[in-house]
Length: 281
Image 1 (tube, helix red, strand yellow):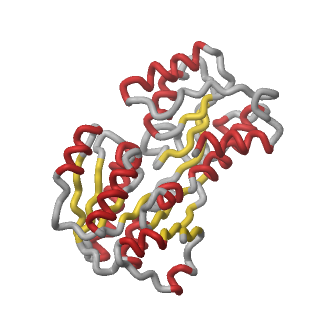
Image 2 (tube, one colour; image 1 turned 120 degrees about the vertical axis):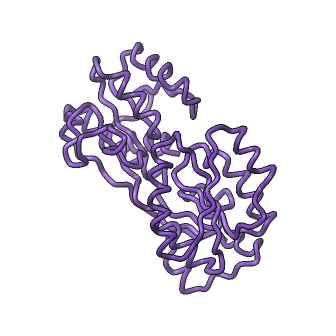
């Protein structure tokens, strides 16, 4: 979705595909171990700019462009300062800038609590190898304490470990929350299936996951995030150094899937629906 939004944004700003810009797309999410190879191949193609989607991809791009200084626009990254991608949000200072999406998971948990107040034990898949997942868990733990919610943290760093979770899913949880965890989000279909089988509210981070069947989403619309990234890329391609372009925050949206609510036996009051940016009926 980020890439599609990026291409659309570029076309609206005078960079239509195949006319003024050509894309060398890696073809989707690459395994963590191959990211360095993917970025290095872009470097040998002498590209003018790299769009790095996710924190691991941005870190690989930063490493690969240390000498060449090829400009990099990342989108999205949870906390680019903590990840070491930029010096500060207002003054990136290097050859990278982009869109940050951090700081919304506490509000995501609040919305889950609002829509499903009886859910007291919330399962959270966690990947300790992903900086975004680590930062999100810290934020969630603070928010959960204030809300009186118990987090059931399930660590998984590989698809096989997630499959083991699906095969032996905890019986004593009341809801599921997916944060900015690329591994978990890539298995949204499996989480939707379990949430409907167990009649568990499922919260996730972006609207396309609500469309896929999550009860609610709160976070960026990745298509819109791609458009935001395109605005930065357009300025870079027109000569503005990334070091002089402040990191921007992604727009955040609340999505509610009423079909899923009905399937798990949950009623969403009309006054809550008025807060939603997107409603799936």
